[in-house]
Image 1 (cartoon, rainbow, N blue to C red):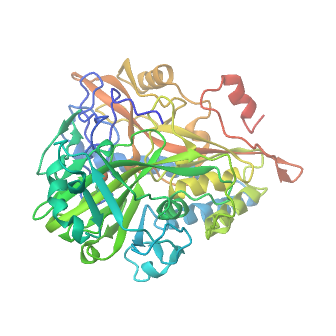
Image 2: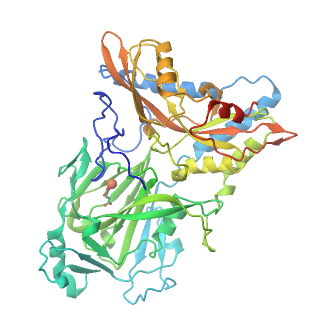
Image 3: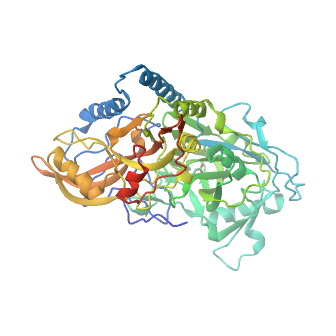
Length: 555
Ligand SMILES: O=C(O)CCC(=O)C(=O)O
Ligand SMILES: [Fe+2]
């Protein structure tokens, strides 16, 4: 896993000053999550995507701008209906657009459950017990078992600062076993203040985060999220492999042991910094230590999921939650006791070996959404000569990373769209879509990019032509023009990332950032003798122009 280049600005906030190209908050490579001071509770989609630093009154054109972006999307889909056949195809298209919209709330962005601790446990993976995972608010969640596993008591051992301290004092058995009870205070004494990345440095700010931590190299545990069955559950719910190709599997990496102590331990709303391009989420495992308060709330767009472990914190079980890395989350204040957690970074990785009879209750290939995609692609009146369909992703990806996004990290609905079209022979690729920057000048059009790299461009923009030149020459545009794409949905502006910096000359010069959202571009093959050709491929990110032309469905 290559780590994210921390020298590169990563944009997650809303207002981004551009001294050169440095953003206000470059996350620290070493330390904890960067803070995305985002909207209170998940999801306004009406934020502007680019603006001049001099635009003090950006609030006033914010709505206008977002309306405009939505209009532009609608323009692309509201196409003329010259004859009956096209009308029919359009009906099919609208059905899919409707279905996509209806599915927005259907996809999990977080999941959680419990693993019972069984002191009789002998390490037998088939030992009976229960493991549950589902939406935490559902009353039946704990009954909807996916896998039956129990875990032996959890042992924690740590390196004491005082190396002469006896080993028997640097160990806890949880739920707290009498012989180790007194060691909780030793553990607490070994933890260090938990900092987080803000403005490019590690800060300890108790008003934002009050917690302490141990680094993974200073402690060890017999707890393993794989043998506890947790990774299997996350895999089925957050990173499913609907056709069971066994291609993408999860790598969980222990990140920290965190302690939030009453009466005021907490972590305000933030988005974790992905440690690499392949990170798609985080896992928090709550150890059985008594505490009150400290609920974890996870948000995505307008949806909220809450994991409140306090009332069962003394029970003989491990409670856990996992969520996609672009989700805002928050740990509410712990009122008393100690909320002790193990956190893991979750990466999507490849598996070339087919899973052996792995239990998969999910079969996503026949969801209503899949059926709508099938109906659209199967309709010979829809793009009979081939063409492009676009889908703005509902989650954020590192789409300003030089190496682009990894399709294996696609989340929720995004993955279903990608796989749904791909399995029908359509070619798919991820592309950054440049959003119209806004400044006191001409209104600028959307652009579809071919590069993901975040750049500083010395171009000066005074007119639409200048903008075209900056975007075309300085940033690079895909051969497919944005107007050639039929869009299935509107961009979710929260997923934006900085693409390049440029200078605007109005009354005075000002630096601006141009932003992109991430989109799936689908090349629908042409109809050949009543059937679609099979493109059986993804686009390449760095292909020559001739290749683009070769792959064009109009050839
Ligand atoms: O402890 C939790 O529930 C979440 C902690 C968290 O957000 C983090 O460590 O980044
Ligand atoms: Fe976090």
